[in-house]
Length: 66
Image 1 (tube, rainbow, N blue to C red):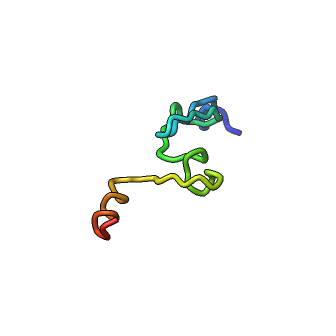
Image 2 (cartoon, rainbow, N blue to C red):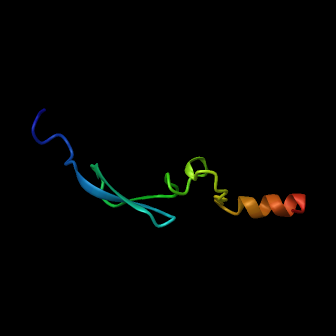
Image 3 (cartoon, rainbow, N blue to C red):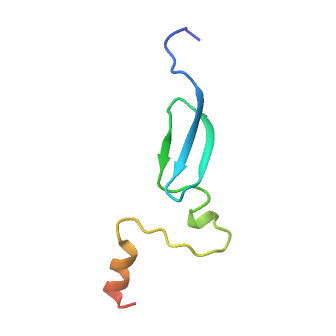
C-alpha cells in the first residue's frame, strides 16, 4: 500500500436507535443507525415488533379502521 493515501482504520462504536451498541472496526467514528439485528423484525426470533418510521403504522390503522 502507498503510505498516506488510505484512511485510518480504528475501533468505533455503532449505536442503534433501540439503544444497543456494537464495537467494530471502521474508518468512521461513532456511527448511528436506525435499525440493527437486535430490533429488525427478521432477526427478533418470533417476537412481533413494529418498526415505525414516519407514522406509517398509525396511518395504516387510521385508513383501514383498525
